[in-house]
Amino acid sequence: MYKRSLVFAAACLGMLLFGIVMISLGTINTFLTSKFNLDQLTVGSLAALLPIGILLGSLFFGPIVDRYSYKNLLIICSFIIFVAFEGIAFASSFFILQLAFFLIGFGGGIINGGTNALVADISSEGKGANLSLLGVFYGIGALGMPTVTALLSKFFPYETIIKGTGLIVLIPVVYFFLVKFPLPKQSQGFPIKKAFELIKESSLLLLGFILFFESGLEGIVNNWSTTYFGKAINLTTNNALITLTVLAISLTITRLILGGLLKKIPSFMVLYVCIFFAVTGSIILLIGKDFVSAIFAMIFFGIGFAAAFPVILGYIGEIYKNLSGTAFSIALVIALIGNTLLNYTTGVVSQTYGIQKFPIIIIISLIIMIILLSITLRKISTKVKI
Image (cartoon, rainbow, N blue to C red; front, side):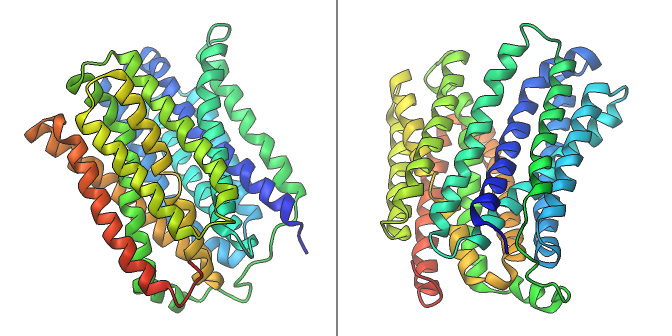
């Protein structure tokens, strides 16, 4: 008794919100450093609270949406993020800052997982295509907010911008209140035994470990490529940052294209082709020695990273329809652990052998991902149309 187009729009608004709040935090580091006289280590400790919050949010959202559906959870988490942003704007102590950063991560993790699971639930066909379109809205938020913040900072103090960002967060809440969402899948009570059985599901674990490497690759390319470009090929800081913008644009445009392509071409073929682009990008990264090669590497990475999450989450949503939220929670937690571990591994390798080994880490991870994907596709071929 819900209208699919309106619910899809609600999910897109939620993902847009997630993109805005996650990226906008990076724009306030200067303000925080100045206001609270923080050093880089302390600012880094604040940023570390974000992934902790996201991890916990990703863990909790699944059972909740399976039992109670999505509406109230999206409203509550949006309000939590609003409170957190206002907390940053009015903070008088470092503890309040720490709490605010954690809450933004927690609320963002729930919204990210919840909107993906919601789109999978309402898509009878073309789950991967619709999830790809959903991902476009994260890109719009992530690309738009830094630009708007940079423009507004010329006219308003950072406190005002942060307060305004918090108020923007409340806009989707009005829409969430008005839209009718799907009913809970487990309205008679959450089946705890079945949920624990999911943890032992080999198909789900294999799909999760593909996302383990995908999330890790996205994380290290975002976090370490600028360092690599600066030290390995002597790019200026501005040019290195431009490559990150190119990556985000490439990823967003590709996901927009995949929204139509995945309805016409088998998803596994699209995924393999995208991984091939990522491999090509890593080879360019390895042999390229100038700004142009860096740009092309990031374009190829954007194309290469676009398909994995929509396609894999689409498979999960199809196989585990009755407990899709919980299945998404398990997969996303595995993915976030991969992000953390691969970033840590990159740091250790860079410290021990030099940042020049960065492309090798990417290539090895992609090879493992291809092997996992081929094994997984054979295993799930009887359960879902690939």
